[in-house]
Image (cartoon, rainbow, N blue to C red; front, side, top):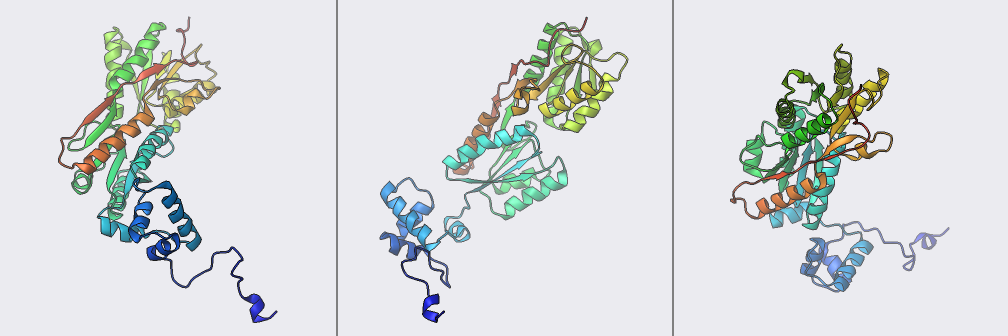
Length: 348
C-alpha cells in the first residue's frame, strides 16, 4: 500500500487529530460566532439563543474542544464546584439527600463533588482539606461536623445538614425529638410498654433521637421501662444491639431504631432468634429510605424529607455564596410516621 493510500480522506467524517489542543478561538471560527459567545455557552448562560448554542456545541464536538476549567476559574475567581461530604456512603439516606442537592445545584450551574467521612474524624478532616485545596465554592456537610469546621467556614460558605449543635454556619435539620416521639406514641398506641431504643453513633442526631424517645416514654408514664442499647448507624451495629436486647430475660416487645439500616439489622437478629415481626416484636426505623418500602421488609419508619433537605441546603448555600455577610439560618423540617408491616399489637 502506498503512502497516499494511508493518508486520511478529507470526507471520511472522522475528526482529524491535531498536535495542539483546539482553543475557544477555533470553536468561535467554526461556529461563526464571537469568542465571548462561546464563553457564554460553555458557562451555561441562559442569555444565548438555542440556535447559536447548538452551533457552538456542534463546533466544539467536531473539534474535540473542552473548556479549561482551571483557566476559567482563574478568570472568574470561582470554580463552580461544590464539595459534599457525607458521613456514610452506604446509608441510602445520604444518597437520597444528595439527589435533591445535586438537582438544585445543577439548576444554578454548579457541579457537585462527593466525599465520605466514614464516621472517622481523620477521613473527615482529609476530605474537607482536599475540597478546600480544589478551591470549591462551598461545602455541604451531611451529618459531619469536622474539627476544622470553623476554619473551613472562614474560607468558603458551609451548610451543615442533619446536625444542629454547630455555630456560625447555615443548618438544615430534622426535628429528631419529634420523630422519636411519633415512633413511641405509635408503639404505645398498640399497647407496648417495654419499648427499647438502639442509640446511634455519637452525634447530635443520636442524642436528640434518644432524648425524644426518653421524653416520650416519660410522658406516657413508662420511665421505668426505658432501655437504651449502645449501637451505631450501621446494619451490623443494629444486629449486635438487637441481639443484646432480645437475649434479655425481660426482652422488649418493641424496638425503636435510629435509622433504617439499624432496623434491618434488628430484623435479622429477630429472625435468627426465631421471633416473628410484628407478632413477637415490633420494630420502627428512621429516615423512611427506599429500604423501608421494599416489599419483603415493609418497615414502619419515621420519614424525614430527604430530597427536600438537599434542596434547602442548596438554596442556603447559593444564598450564602451571593451574600456572605447575611445572618446564619437554621431550617427545621418536620418528620412524619409511615406505618407498614413491622409494627402491631403487643404480644399477649
